[in-house]
Amino acid sequence: MEKWENGPPKFGTKKWFENYWYHFKWHTIIGVIAAIMLFSFAYDIMSKEKFDSTITIVGKVYVSDEQRQRLCEIAEQYEVDRDGDGKVNVDVVPINFPEDDDTGMNAQVFMAAQTRFSVEMTDGESMILIMDDYSYDMIGDPLNFIDLGAYSDKAYDDGRKIPLSET
Image 1 (cartoon, helix red, strand yellow):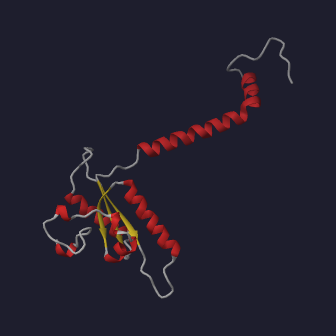
Image 2 (cartoon, one colour):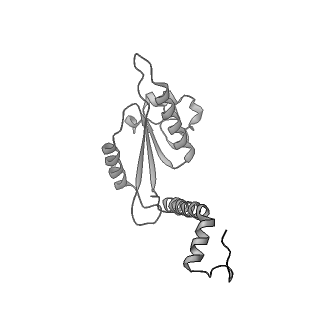
């Protein structure tokens, strides 16, 4: 250990920096990495795109990115600016429940689709839910959906869904 004749080196000198780096090198490196990560996370959260509405499409048919983008463009023509940012943003979230085949449906794919559906419904941002009969049956319990009979003057077989073919 080095002894100083006139006390420790003055702040800002080369000798001071060498002494600081020798004793606090890892503290400084970890602190800089933590600060970079913190600012990166904060920037990601603050710059996240906010949507005026979200449409969730659940079905056995795969929706490609091009189809999803086209659906967003079409839906934006009929949507209004709800958040007041001067532009209309609509997000379309496709969830694919693959059709069962002879070998049986892949359990992991089904579980992933079911988990994604649960997250979308729990998140509460989806304003419109479009499902085909196959997916509606796959979701299971009809108690997951409310009776829409009070919102329509038509009588449907199942009050929890309104067929698009009859609208």
